[in-house]
Amino acid sequence: DADVTQTPRNRITKTGKRIMLECSQTKGHDRMYWYRQDPGLGLRLIYYSFDVKDINKGEISDGYSVSRQAQAKFSLSLESAIPNQTALYFCATSDLAGGGGTQYFGPGTRLTVL
Amino acid sequence: ELKVEQNPLFLSMQEGKNYTIYCNYSTTSDRLYWYRQDPGKSLESLFVLLSNGAVKQEGRLMASLDTKARLSTLHITAAVHDLSATYFCAVMTGTASKLTFGTGTRLQVTL
Figure 1 (tube, rainbow over the protein chains, first blue to last red):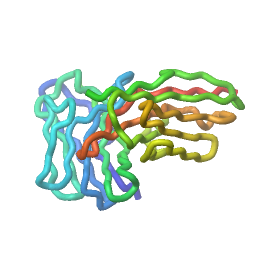
Figure 2 (cartoon, one colour):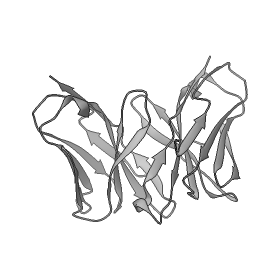
Figure 3 (cartoon, each protein chain N blue to C red):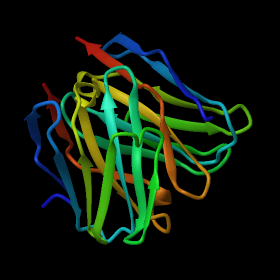
Figure 4 (spheres, chains in turn green, red):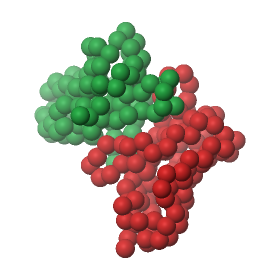
């Protein structure tokens, strides 16, 4: 079974709709991250969390919100989706104490906003 | 603001040839990561470089880090088709374990 899972894997929605992307992990890591990937721009950090009570904005947090429901779950919401939020979204986890801080990525969610 | 630049952005090479991908970054860091991404897939961790002069090798790939020059290289030896993918470097800064990614190098190995 995958250590980091994301649901849904694909989603098509309309402008103005509220969307939630979910991430779960079984790696036991404290740190979780949300990124978006756009062609030619690499990955950009949206939000990150060190534990349930610690949520931080990344470089492109406008238009997004997150919720850390438990150590293993980190959700990303688009309150009112717009077309330029069409992208591939990745969740990642890390444990600074082991693996040299390597981040492990989920399979991604492809979101299309019409 | 940390900037991470990779070059080339696209690389087409023949099987059996050698080549190097470069990753330059703009501020001090001693942690650098290399990832591989196949089309439509997630990112797979390749190497973690944690100190100046670090060198890691796995199969036909070898990564190195020069923190003084703020440069990492990913060297490909005797390329094979299975190495075709996009390769990203990422630099960690600060205590927040935040990664800043380069824009990626798309490698195409032709027969």
